[in-house]
Image (cartoon, rainbow, N blue to C red; front, side, top):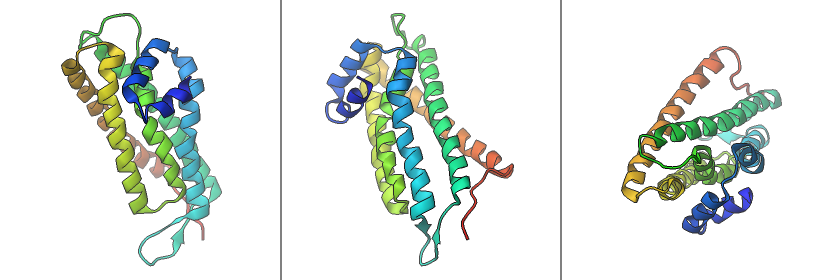
Length: 200
């Protein structure tokens, strides 16, 4: 039911979060049925867009990456998505005690995986790397992912909405810190020779 939940979240989030809580998948099944598959969408789209379509700055030439360089960056990006979702999920589980979440069931990775679904699905726009299109689609995807986080956390954790709002804000802060850390790691990786290599 992972992919079914992913698409129904976009149209009826409240009811879907309730169904996700009821189904309570183990993390391994969640990765196999949801995260591994959906994370391929932005990764594959980015590879295609950067090698076959390319992008253009002003009236300059079309810029593309070599297939080898794009593949390296695609693999690193894909792994970063998989690890990032898991780490945020673990942070959510860690914060659960602070926000008095009851029960043994841990929904951290589940929440992280499903909340980021709009970003993964709309990552398909990377197949056409046009800066304004990608910024517009990215803004919509991130805004809806944040909405799903705030909407789904109190439902999954079975806590009052007020406490859920504070909890979700903490999770969002961790996500922003991880994003900045990822940018810093990218600079380090590029400095050791795994940066983009352009054609021509």
